[in-house]
Image (tube, rainbow, N blue to C red):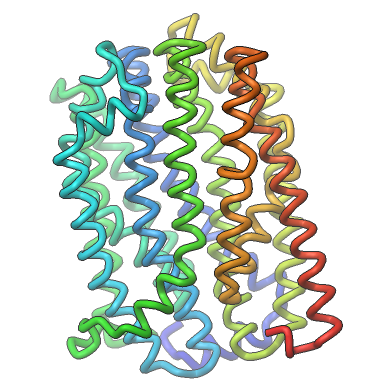
Length: 454
């Protein structure tokens, strides 16, 4: 897929189902593989270092979310804008967005990395660290923080690669990195006896390989869009356009970061250090399911964005409908696995009986309303894909801020640790209802006013 005209023709005329399969399958493989970074780390650390090491690693999760948030701010925002711009047949502007995204990633990620390194210990205390777990977290973060720029570039420009017409190549990028991480983890953890630090080194090396691979793509003459030296200078309007759309996934990730901190402090109070380790296991499993939906979203984003830019609104809405059906089916599968196989899943992460018992109960409760959360994630992505940043940001924040935080503050007071787990499905259900109602009124308005709604 080296010709922009070929990409244009396919996104505008190919059957929707075939396009979703072609674009989403590689994206799903890529996001699932990416989520395996944390899962593989937790499995090897849990089996090779101990249950408190899992809790220590879980403490670093807010920081990893924060790094991903800034990567998505630029990468997802630029990817959406590039899809729309290519739909408008403006290749020159698409290449300016690409280069500006590169410059922005360095500036923003670099700032975050420096501040995180300076305030590392204080941050881990805020994240819920105790004397038993904080040392494990610091050992990991001292190495993983400098590699934050690599994760931002690898993840962000992988999105752009996919949005510019290379879904399979984007998938290969993620597969290569995850496989490499899975190979290096046991070598550094067990072979070199580096423990949790070995996991961090393996992760950074994997991100480095991914960054080199994905950036090299945009230097090749056969690529749809390429880097040009003249475009690296930031332009106010382009930066604004990238951030305006990227604010939606950024807000969601940032909210997730704050919520994870609140979850950690709640779990410490009602369940102790092992409860945080259990949350690390539960979060790994649930994130794997959610990342499948994120992959679906990444695959449908170029289709929705392109057809929106080309004013092919019927194709845009048909893509949304099929994505909602697929997303709901996938989260229903996650519900079945989490509800009926929780003990099997938790046993992969730890041999500690007490930790397994806490994680098994929490996992069952957390997935109760998983079947309906897929639609909420897909609908939020739809508004992001068509440039409706405010609506997308609002929907992104409903689960985290409007519902989950109040539930975490109220339910544990009456139900203890069980209340902390219960807060998750309650917020899932309420946010799915809000997303569905918002979409209903948007479609109703669109049908009433036709294209004027856009």
